[in-house]
Amino acid sequence: MGITWVLLAAVLFGAGSVAQATALAASGRSWTAMLRHPAFVAGTVAEGLGALAHVLALQTVSMAVAQCAVSGSLAVTALAARWWFGTRLGLRGIGAVGALSASLVVLASVAGESGTATDTVGLEVGLLVTAAVVGLAGLAGSVARRAWLVGVCSGLAFAACSTAVKLVDLTHPLAALTSAPALLAAVTGALGCLWWTVALRLGSVTTVTAVVVVAEVVPPSLLGPLLGDEVSAAFYLVAPLVLAVAALACVVLARSAPAEAPAPVVGKRLPEPIPA
Image (cartoon, rainbow, N blue to C red; front, side, top):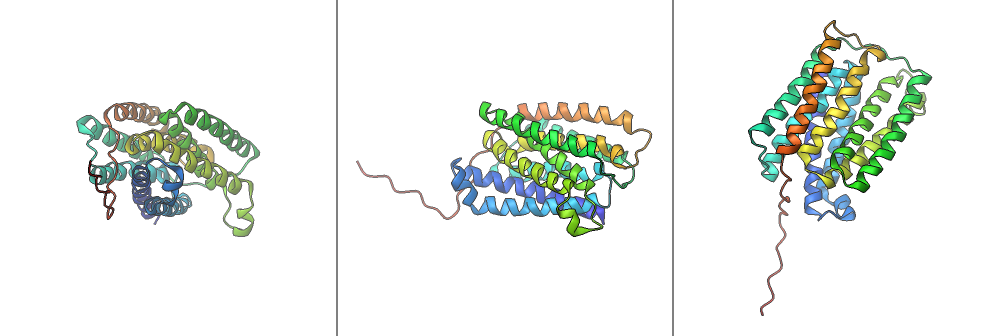
């Protein structure tokens, strides 16, 4: 059942990303128009349902396997962006998407079985520090208009959110809602959504998604053993190689993916020109 939640989350994350990018293109980069656009609302709902599926996956599979939902969403985003925006990545871009997705799947394959995470003060402090750093760095990136930096901050915030969710003890649901890990998950998840939206305003959806994917998938996957997940003997050999391939794929994708064309506005007529 865990793999089902992983696949569902991948589809929802990818579709939600393109829907939000569509709203951004159609709203003329106005915050108020974007937030009220039906496509943005639909994309946000899809992202929320994807997050719920991701949480359910984290309860039954290892961190690395659950994070494959994020890596799979990159392929969904690339295909949907090509269909809706007419984006053409070219052979290098397609190869980069394939290499990135394959490398993260390889990382998941050597991750082993899911374990029970133990909440500690050290982990909570680490997540709190991560939230502060991500908040400040994301603000600096948005002011400097650096899409890649804001995307990294979004991915790291989502990674911290996934880690915090792994620490939540669901045996007592009411107490879990007010626990420190749950509060940290809410804060980091909100930061991830904020910087994700800002990154979409600064760069193309495919490139931004690639950066977010790497930042979101790799850290929790490497932290899996510290959270009780079992790993194979090849994990520590494969993990650095995967990180290198993923980083290289993002660089290639950033250089080969053009900005998406504005999405078509269906059912809206342009005003007639005024005669001279």
